[in-house]
Image (cartoon, rainbow, N blue to C red; front, side, top):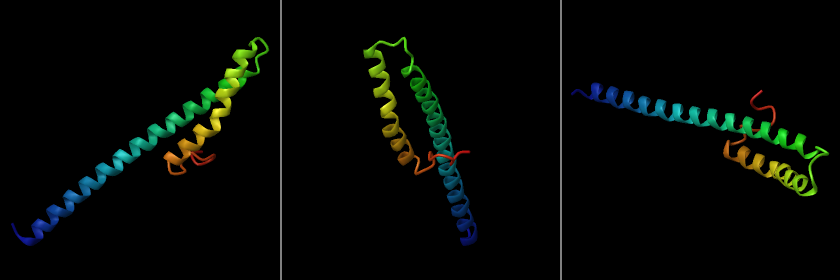
Length: 91
């Protein structure tokens, strides 16, 4: 094989590998974004339910604990996404 052909083969091989890495990152970011949206939706439901007057004290307390954990989980999700989950970033 000539030197030019060998260089072309290496370049194409590198581009294929780079494309696979980009595709994997895109898939991960899409899944992470979907999971963050689902988590936000569930936490909104929790906030609505925690104010339900029909809940007894124990149930209301558990709902408040879940809602208060929201900030910690959101912070972890933002960190894992490299800031992609920040408010307004996916709008």
